[in-house]
Image (cartoon, rainbow, N blue to C red; front, side, top):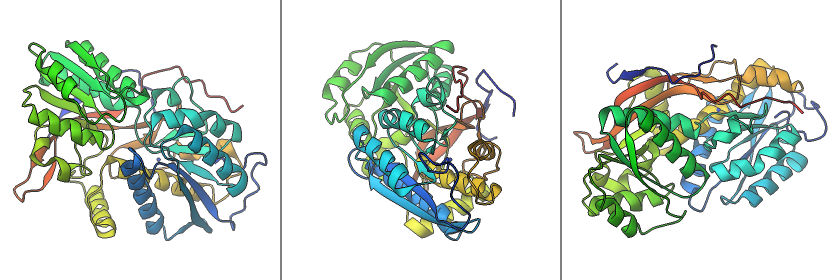
Length: 401
């Protein structure tokens, strides 16, 4: 796999523990249970995402028949409540008492940052299935951290480029005032400026904000804005998009595809139409692999999958394929990581590889638009694709100590 330091070319549309032992290395045998500890939010503002990741994990386990390389797969799960202190306690207990082999999670970037040092110290492999915190695969990278979802830069820098080239040259940024919001907004703004655009305003409402009247008032007072990029996570995105529509603001809305996807279509209805998104998965992609995945997901959960479901699914699939490669013996941590960055996982998202230099996923980023189908269902049309997007940062210095 060649290293790339620049964003891959844009193509227009049409065209995923170390043994889980904190102090004793490699005593698990192929006959013992394979324990997976989940560090996920099942309640609070991020609960919708944690439950979706868990659904993806469970489907992958079921498809594998509940075991791999002679080891029964056992999930150990508890709500981290989107609280860094709770998550850290969970990780310590999973490693010390449950002796998990791998960890999957968390949802939020600030939670991921809080557990990073314990993951590294305990030499337990963590598969990040949502949190996009750039630092975790840059200056805070660890050979024990593998991200199967996205980095905050990876989703949003391409959108900035696309927006400046296709939507207009003047943008405003609105994002929740926490790690992910700042990183995502910064990535979009950087891509937008580098493609010739100007960011004329930035607003950073507090996490949990439900009433965006003051935000809308300020947006209405801006001159000649072509696009408003926004990121309000969880249920807050429904409030923002609905209030944006009610305010009858004219600039196009853009942001992470999760702003308006399968989780929120019922609550947004026609207010979602025309919202531009960027992400690593589109449920409507017309490929045999994705069609089979969507059919299985609908049969199992009676709903269509979104990008976060796929990240949970691919995290578990990556573990399964790694354990197969290792014939169930996970005692050699360096060999385990080497397997994780080289095994082939046939992902519904399309291209999927783990970058050996930093543990971040390499994948296509799709630019989408919310539309209404002839049958009345909402979905995404793919406007274009940035292929095999690799985080360009070179600050990661992997150390096993």
